[in-house]
Image (tube, rainbow, N blue to C red; front, side, top):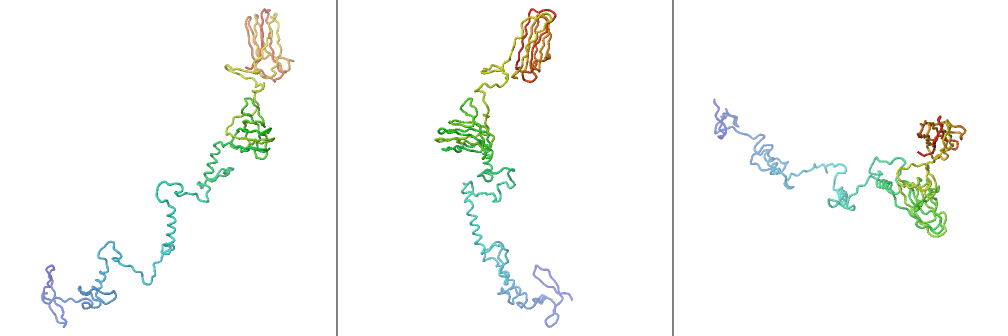
Length: 431
């Protein structure tokens, strides 16, 4: 037989069914008046394990016997009404398992027990920080100090072999001050004594000389100037009075004044070697560059300095090594006659040349002869032929030992005709 239609609300399409069984097992055709019965799965409405009815009340506990709908309503009631950040009262509580006292923490984790110590540490750090940003004075600034096991801020730095920090220096500042000391002249050193003892003594390292200024010489006292390389064994130090134009070096003084010196020794000092009375006071000033002031001055004596060639206008006093000249002959020679001059020595070695000039109205030959055996034998070292009525000049560089054994002379051999005029002269000269 055809299925009767099943009617649904207008929004649903119609359906047909055959029949269903009644409680008494009779067949019941499906119709509008007898629709298909719907039974709650698992039991009657509200029964244990049943889905429940939409009108079921919210369950009162999580463990009682309630319908699924009642329990779902209880669950929905525990969820927030909307998404977003909530207050504590609006949030879901998180409860630890009943068998766990607390979550396990790592060693050193921040706990209430450790909070006091942490607060103390943070307080100490805060106390050391500046109260505000910006430039501060030294007292209000945080200092940066090199590690205690570093000699300076250059971990790999080291001094060169054989060089040590000067006394009193430390770290970079010490080395920089030592360099400054080496590049600059120190302050004068002064001292005063009233007995036979050292007045001033100082290291002469980095210096080439200086001067001792005797500001007070005492009464009949003698000051001796000395130098040393080991600061133990001393030798005399020549000094020169800076107030005298032609002072000679001395090693002692008995009067006030400035006494200059040059020295390459490691230490210098001024010592009262003879004391009578009064106060002896000396100021020592050292210089990194000092003009030489030792030796013998020529200003106070007649010492010679050899031959000097001077160009221009010069005023000279004292002994000057000028040339030495001689007129050898003015006597006319007979035909084929010979004139032989005197052998002369360059005994003091101040001359470099021997020169000769001759004039004759007749032809002849001019010679310069040299002897190396005090005149026993002579050899010609220069020669020149002269025409009648002309002059000739010869010059030779002086050689041989500087002694009376080395002699130079002039010689002239006349031609076949007798002379009526003859002049011959010679000289030693420095140039």
